[in-house]
Image (tube, rainbow, N blue to C red; front, side, top):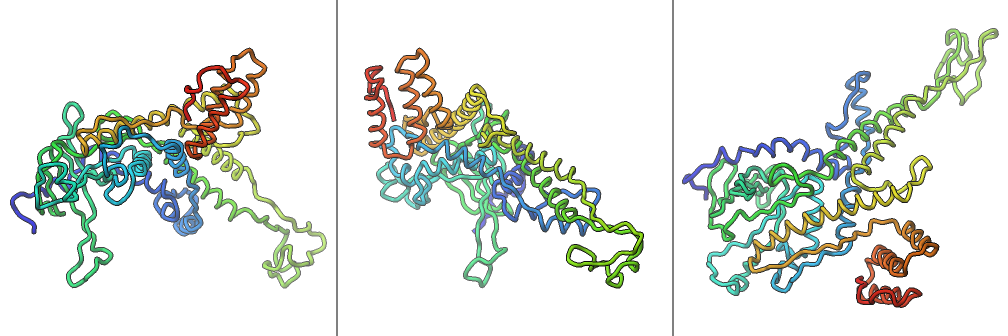
Length: 466
């Protein structure tokens, strides 16, 4: 039951300045990643000066969204988690490894979900919480016996409404919004439209549950001694908590591709078919002047002395210009993401140096993202398990190099005065890139064969790590 001991109406209606500044982008980023008919039916389609309301509605009905945001984000996540990170040591973490979210999801899966959301929005909040209990446990064993296992939950930026930080960037308090289904009177199940929002205020000392009017519903002690939220940021920004999205520029470029594709579709619908033109009036022609019958599907007579009717074709230059611009913007999407489009552009193959720089850029971007994930989850684990003094380790090489290029490099080394150790290292790198999905025992067998190959004796077999 709500109590009037304190009212936080102004607080639940307030938003952090960084929230206000980014809210519109978050909506764009979410719809750009999700795609589908909702994007095409939204306000992302812009009108132009030569169409009226009806023309715009017809064009909007034909609009389609070519989604490049989802593949970019998913490609980053795929490379980053191709080899699961190592959480060391993991013995003291107990249920956090296999049931990190309190619903049976393991820690690696939660890390991947968190990374995807951070890439989309710029940051995501990792919350630490535990089930409520009427009993107050005094030891860890009592907590386990009561089922009070800590768990992680993710809060998207548009539900992390307000916060304050100290001079070091540590949170002093925060306000979180969460959907709260409440059955309408006389209805056993919630119906559409019955959803209300609940709010929770966290300080370093306590938590307070609030309703939409700001009335206090419940409150309790904060067992963590600090605000139990950690911000996982895709890229650092000039402010604490908030980060920069992978889609910060890409979402706008993808929206422009959507609009140009719609204009191209309009040209195709309006100008694809050639137009038949003829001299004189319709009554001079056969078919009783019925212009609808004049065309390629019938034979008709035209007056003697008149120029034969002919077809005129629309100018294709505008469509060609749109196609070139769309193709250019698609290239820009992959350039902004530090990814290769996957095919040679305009018949030109990239040089070996250019490919090397592409690999370094992409691998460094993945390494930076891995560092942010490891740092945020290490801090979150430290909240749930204060006794843990471990690390989260991602591989240093994420396998983004092209396998064919690596094979060519290995082949060329045989004609160069290069020692066998270098070639062996290249083979090991190629094996790591191609054989990540193999069981560890089989990978070790491959590395053993590399060590025992023609270049055997160069270096120690213990150097190779699958």
